[in-house]
Image (cartoon, rainbow, N blue to C red; front, side):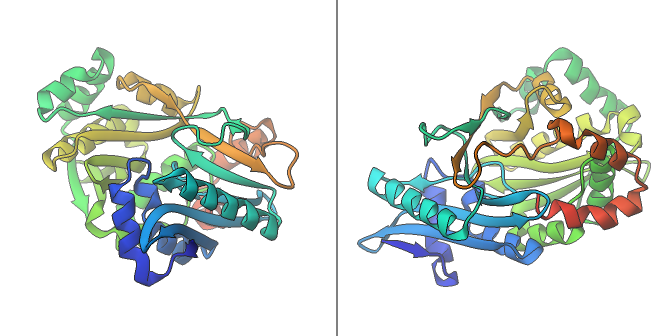
Length: 339
């Protein structure tokens, strides 16, 4: 039996997710609250149930935009998603439900963001990879595992006198992050989104800010899930480049995560050949392909809604020149549909 998630079932859903090897942090029920509160998109969180036990989950978000198309995504604003199921029967039932909903909504396509291929007969975006690595419990071993040139960057940040502090507010992080995103030519998410993330995930969402003599250098928002740390959003001010602020920041995230008992550092998604891809490779992480599998409903081919699409190059170049306050004002209106 397939059911829609209700608040009374949040705990059961999350217990299933945490016990499942195929589920991820992005399958947690809290994402439904985040997306509804921050963006007001319609969500459909389905679960399969057999004899009173949950046997599979599928979070879906419907994003309908004049600029960026009409898509049903698992999971929007997340790097992983798709069906997490205990058996083939539950998997097939959830897939069937998703395809039925996609056609009822009349979307262009249904997108499943899987770490492993689950729908071999669907086309997939051969664009994204993820970077994950096991951590040692010893800080010196983790530092030694970073390739020499990158390790020198971390040491330069330490030598420069950078310090890290955990902020309960997202204000300073948002300032550094929005400046960094503007410089990349990308619309920034609304400040409210990050406030909701911090509120909903609580202690599992940590805001780490890097300072130099009291001045803001960089900031990262990380999630903690089981034995993993996921530095999900991060960025630096103009000071970060010269002071090696971003290098120091991610080392601090790693160091703090080890102290909290984490065994896995999930550096997250990057597009192949981009600056973030190269940055993560320099840390000694090996890319793992992601399977963003697409069921084409009304679309004839996979929509190319990403910064590498040549048609967005003029927009990106213009956006980089916007004053920061303007980008912070206009960006959220665009970014809310870039799930």
